[in-house]
Amino acid sequence: MNAQLQLRKPSNWQDFELLCKKLWGEIWKCEDTIQRNGRLGQKQNGVDVYGIPLGVSQYYGVQCKGKDEYTHAQLTKTEIDNEIDNARNFKPALKRFIFASTSNKDAEIEEYIRCKNIESITSGGFEIFVSFWEDIVDLLEDNEKTYKWYLSNCQYKQAADVNIYIGNGSSLCIYPLYARKHIKYVQKCNQSQENLGFTHLNGVFIPQPPRITMPSILGGPQEVNHSWCELTITIENTGTVMLDHQKLEISFSSEEIEAVDDMFHIGIFDTDLLKQMKVDNREIFEYSDDSYSLYIEPLKPIVEKDSRSFKFRILPHVDAEEINIQWRYFSNGFNKDGDIRLTITPEFKDIEVTEVTEFIREVSEPRVEIMHYITVE
Image 1: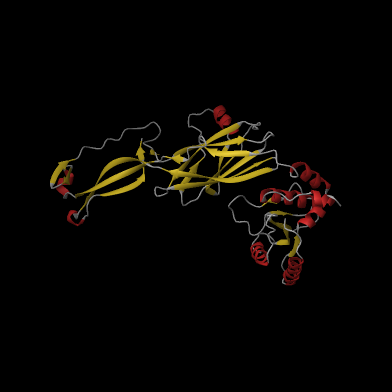
Image 2: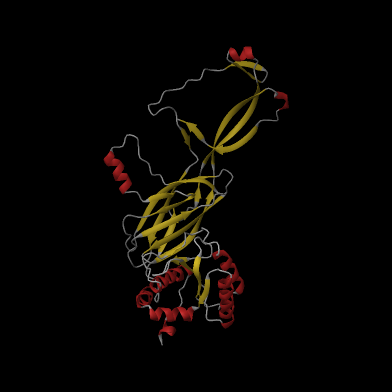
């Protein structure tokens, strides 16, 4: 009976979500198949943890509501209604939906949940239940495996910790190279003058040099975008335990960048052995369904006070002034998230461009355009 007084609440929502995954995985006897829903920033349809209990043919879902125990925040009816509406969009449809909260028991909310449960079942929907912190402690006492894990990993100050930073950790500025095109207009030549290779500039017809295209052994000239920015992100082990089985997710806003690149490349002249070595040593990956995210899976553990760095590239929008990087790190039951904000200080390559028009008098003064600096090489 003393355990309830000794078990403190998780200090953050990530730890609470992991506790719910392990606890209900043991309760439902599906530890190897229960999952957390999606990744940071993705739509979850009201469900943080889901699984199919042993002997059941439909999914059960858990919505984890971590509350600050110091402000005594409580689960509200509005939150309940919103999450129930969201959970109705989970596919396939749920059989049971559970609110798990670190807030203390509340008789009014329990009554509200009971009413919502009958209302949902009567209309052919899922069952709805709630487990407050006291209920979760009772469940922990009945599920020894998760109880022991929680005592050894979450009851004391967490030994695992990381610092995630870009570059050297102090300079948070990138310098993409853009083309600053100064565009002037010339009048289009008549057909006979064009045939002779002339163009019109400031009232004078001038000859144009012939274009020479150099052959390439790689099948012709290739476009090179010089506006890509190479970044180095570092995972620093600031805790007291070795970090293993790691994953670092990195997400960007589509309003700030156009693309990301994991810099994985296999050359056309690489031997089969070299290709396989590159694949075996790959640690940075692009998501097939997300053009603005990467994930890193270090092949080797990071020991205490050590760090590992990884390179990737981003292509900023030319009108972006800042880039916000959201990250989420996982390792052996430990997880942490944060963000890094980069300031953009562009550099420019001035280029003179001439455009031909038939109506030179109607064209305004020369104009300037900022765009990615692309060359053909």
